[in-house]
Length: 131
Image 1 (cartoon, rainbow, N blue to C red):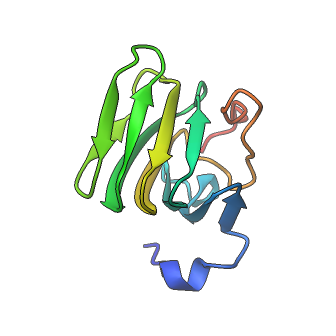
Image 2 (tube, rainbow, N blue to C red):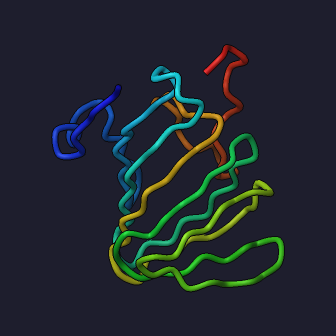
């Protein structure tokens, strides 16, 4: 059994920060669960374009208000508490935070915690080792 406290992981090596967002990595690849689980906070007024070409991601909004635009179709959806979206087609998207957004996120394959977004908004393909 794995038990972790979000509040105790903040400001540790599991608290990954980038321009206008932070992500506390509750589960990572080395936990051998087959997915990673993060609590991600996006700053109010921020806009982020991502394209997870090598990962699937599902996201559940816990608090805040924003929107997500599928850059392949142009469709925009409101993001509010209780809304989930899944990037099942490696969808390139822009996420906008009107208010601070707090999101619970799962990645498959799991991330290691050391990834950084590449210029195209993706994470590099994971190594082929079992996760």
